[in-house]
Image (cartoon, rainbow, N blue to C red):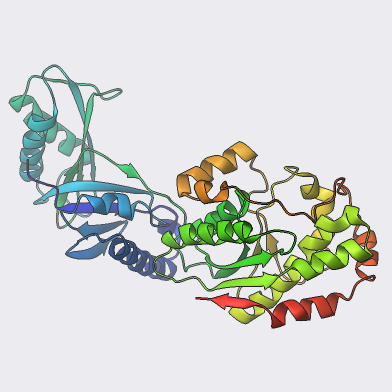
Amino acid sequence: MSHTDVILVRYDEIALKSKNVRSRYEQILVKNIKSMLNADGCSYFRISKEMGRIFIHSDDENVVKSAAKVFGVVSVSPAYTCEPTLESAAGLCADLGSSIIREGQSFAIRARRAGNHSFTSRDIGIACGDAVFKNISTRVDLDEPDVEIFVEIRQEKAYVFTESVKGVGGLPMGTQGKMVALISGGIDSPVAAWLIMKRGCEIVPLYLNNEPFSDETTRQRAMACIDVLQKWSPQKKFTVYEAPHGENLLAFLENCDNRLNCVLCRRMMYRIAEQILKLEGAHGIITGSSLGQVASQTSQNMLAEMYGMEYPIYHPLIGLDKLEITDIARKIGTLGPSTKPTTCCMAVPEYPSTAAKPQEVLDAEKLIDVPSLVDTMVKNIKKFS
């Protein structure tokens, strides 16, 4: 058999949208696929689409892996093409079966059709199965076959393939607006940002620099994680912000009950994130919080952190445990940079509050000049793009 000549790309949720929304999402998905293929150096002739399918016309074997990384893609299959007739599909299945089915192995034909045809999916299965039987000594096993041959006959072409590579899923990036993502350089926050990207959002990464309560290694980890996330979004160059946060931490240490440091710290992070949200026209703020994972991430503390904030704050990891988060980090490529040696934040209290009340946090903030601290952060913020 020669090399496959087309790659079938499947999506899922997009198909449930209204006609106009679906068309727009498909166009964005095709654009994103092109960007990923170009970024990965893959060669292709063109990309076309029909109802429910996108076709990448290419004989580059690297296209499959590249396309599977695009948000919105559910699965990818390298396929052989032929005319949309029973005879052509059966002949192609016979040739393919002869090359991949070994003596004594079982097989199954998985058939489907789309468009107007004079035959049914069952007819496809029978014709293609009979053709395979004539070429090789084998048997049919529809439940647990050794080899599966998939046949999809559409209006203009028929496609025959043997594998389906799982895609990343989700929605195409650029269909759900923009979010400011707090990136610390730890394991959790990059995963949270990736999950919101998977749901179709562009992100604006924000790193809060805690110096002198942390060092350059912490910043390097955060920037390395942002670089990894950027590879998942080649179609859109991130605008990255870095804000000074050390002066805020010093103000907490000198003026407030230190048990509240983590809650007060988070509230200041949200305030600067809100300023960036306004600048960027974003719709919300993303954190890496996971309920109960550390002392500062209790439900009571999270209420106190968000109390009185003006814009939506989302926690994509809220119901995941550390093992689940780590598994995702490993899969998406951020685990390595997230776990490089670094200095932990030295402003974290020995015994942080686990049940901060909104009123006591508000009272603590009266002891510091919050507007002045926010103004200082805004004036000294750094922007990279």
